Length: 548
Image (cartoon, rainbow, N blue to C red):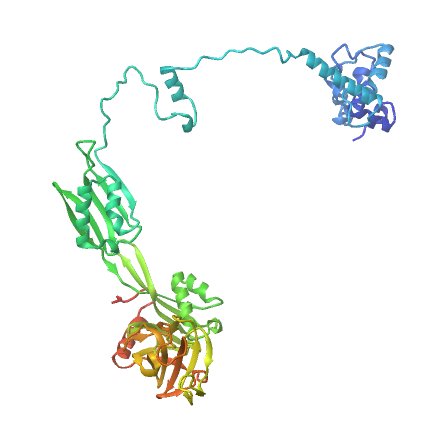
């Protein structure tokens, strides 16, 4: 809302902006307010003559009100024409606080600078000076009981010696003790063991005497060996009263979980210690989880409650038989995991026991089975996974191929029944695939020689070895270390002579590519199928007792 024409101050709008808001307010007051309209002197009733002098009437909308609203709060102060002219001349363009950053070099700027310098000089003259110190009083430091009382009531960091909340100053009713009393019993709960072998050292560090610690070790080893105690096992100790402070406290009671199915307690019985074994009932119920694969096999299995490690093992096992990415969303996964649940509520999850897929064209049933000293996954028909022949049983280059050649030592042409792989002396030699050692020893021109039988009319031979690391009749797996490269027998340098047999005849190892697959038969197949039917009968979320 603007100022009415009858109430506007003298001067152009440029003068209003140049003189600032204060000049605009002063001019408006001097020319429009009833207090000054009558020519009253502003020095008669204070600087502005009253409260009404600070505002314009139209700032509050008084012209819109009635007669009472439009009446002035104070009566007009009569004045002379001389005082009115003086106010117009002196205060019309007066700027009490000019901006020193604007209109630099003008008279207003110089006046403001002079005012600032004058105020600074006045402040400097009124200052006491640097050479005149200001004296004050410092209270004397507390000592004795006064210091104790002040510390007890003050707030100070503990690192600075603060004892707030710990004690208060002693009074005349407090008398010093001749001896510090001890707790009759000390309970130490949750003492962790880094390993079972550290049991005795942990007891001694906890304050148990050497004699009691040795007796505890002798009692515990009757029930369980130290190496069977899992790392992180917690001890609950109770130490009794001692007659002499120079002696260790006697062990009153100790309890810990020695195994998942066994808890041990050592308690004092008169002058000695006695061991109590507390068996814990364990329910071996395999955990079975089923559900639709949906958009993500891993997420669906985890959402159904399967453990993360079991799901990862399930996917790896399933990938050996079917492409996991090709399983449709309508397929259903079937996971069975070994589980042990203690009567105290703890649960231990074991290895994957069964991996299956149903409800679609890709039907899979896989279960692990141990045969000939090794564990392998078999399907419902007792067939194992297919394994391929290793291309190279040793790292190196082929120095001589299969076929007719001139013998480097005999000097005439004859059949070379294998390939030669040049490699450094002592380089590792691996089994081409799963098999059984048919021969391991010295064999005329082959030197140190190993022959493996892989079943299905196939076999491999490894000659000129410097070391033999297997024995006859031993089962080996694909990639297992069986020997080392050498130069024994009829050889001109360190290399591996590698042969491949099919129905007893040597063939070119580089021209044959085959896979081997194990097949359970006889009693192994019957036991396998019986175990598989037992697992398939387990309801979802429940299970029969696992005998493993």
